[in-house]
Image (cartoon, rainbow, N blue to C red):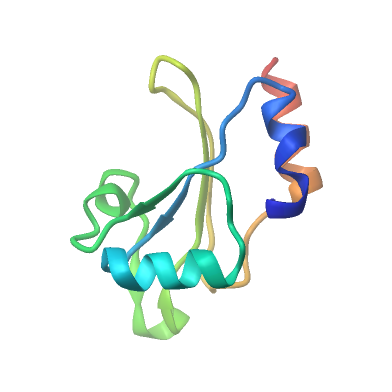
Length: 101
């Protein structure tokens, strides 16, 4: 998403990355990955709980979640993976976003 961020903003969408970690650790990760879109540290996993994104030893830690939320705060698309690598591709995500337009 980092490399194709403009494709989201051109559609009027915003990408927000949320890390279940302290501000310092999240900043280190985000900066190391050169993530420039809005970022949020969630050390108490409050946002993760709101969206039912689980953390489990079986999945080697934090499970991935990807959500499309409209301007009214309604979740229009949700993908919850079981393993860290199970996340929709950018093309799939843009197609879901386009389908909602």
